[in-house]
Image (cartoon, rainbow, N blue to C red):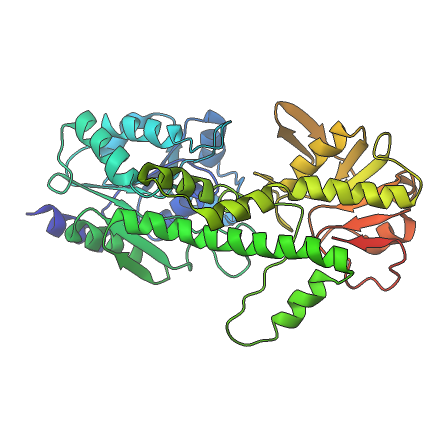
Length: 440
C-alpha cells in the first residue's frame, strides 16, 4: 500500500499516533485537541517540569481547559516525555518550538534545528512531519528537509511527508481557540498536502486551506503578523502627531471604525508584545536581504514600534514635570506587565522595556498585575505587589497603566487615590472624573 493510501486509512481509523514537540502555548493546546479527537498523543519537551505537570494532569496554559487535560491524561490518550526515542512510535509529528530573535535581532532557529535533529534520529517510514513554528519562508525545505533526510536515511515524499502549517494562537481570545481557528497547510508535494490536511480536518472544527508549498504557508504567516505590525506602527506614529496637535487618537480611531468597509481599527500602545507580531517582520526582512531586497515599509513600522517604550517614558517625564517632579527619584506604580489584557503571558511585553527604561532614569518602580505575581527579564526577577489599596496608591508620584486588564483591577480606586495616572491603553475611558488622567 502506498504511503498516501496507508496514512489516509489510518487517519480514518484514528489509529495514527501523534507526537507534538514543544509543549508551550502552541504545542500543548494542539496535543490536547489531537487527544480529544481520539488520537493517542505523545508530547515531547526538553523541560522536565512541563513533562511532569502534563503527566500529572496539571495545566499551565490559559487556553487549555483544566478538566479536559486531566481527563485525557487519566484515560491514557495523552502522555509526555523528555525521551525523543519515542518518536519511533508516532505517525504524525508537529514541531511547535519557539523561534525568537537573537541579541542582534536576527532569527534564532536553533530550537527548530535541534528538534529536527532529534526527530531525524528516530523517524520511521510512513510518517508525517509538520512544522508549526513561525519562521522565514524556506525553512521547511531548506533547513528541515535536509536534516530529516540525512539523519533518518529516508527520502522526503517517498518515505515520509513534510509540511508547514503555521500556528494561529491568540492567548485569551474567548471565541477563537486552536480547535475552531482555520488552518493553512502547505507541504512538499500534492499528496503530502492532501494527507496532512486530512489529519488536521480529523481534529479541528475549522476550515483547512491548502496552499501549493511550505514556502507559501510560511510567507502567509509572516504576512498576517506584518500586516498588524505595519498598521500598529501607523497608528503609533499618528498617536505622537495627534498628541502634538491636541487631538485624541483614540477618538479618531473610534470615529474611523464606524465606516463599514475598507477600515480595520488598530490602537496605539507602549510597544508591541507577544510571540509573533514583534518578531515576524524581522524574520522577513532578514530573509529579504538574501535577495538584495529591503523591506522599507516594514522596517519603518518596526522602528516606530520599537521606539514606543522610549516615547512612553518621555511622556511619563512630562507628566511628572507638571507636578514639579523628575523621573529621577520618582516613585512609580506600574499597572500590568502582560503583553495584552487579561492573560498571564509577558513574552516580549513592552511593559518590561518601559520598566527597564524607568529604572535607567532613576525611577523607583513597583508593579501590580493580577495575572503575574513575578517575572524574569534580562536575568533579573521582579515581584509584584500582592494587592492594591488606597493607602498603597497614594504613596506613588504617578501610576502608569501598561496592560489594559479588564478584570481584577479597580481602576476607580486607582484614579480616586493617584496623584497622576498615565493611561497607555485607554482602559480608563469610562472614568468620568479625568482631572488626573493623561492618555497616550
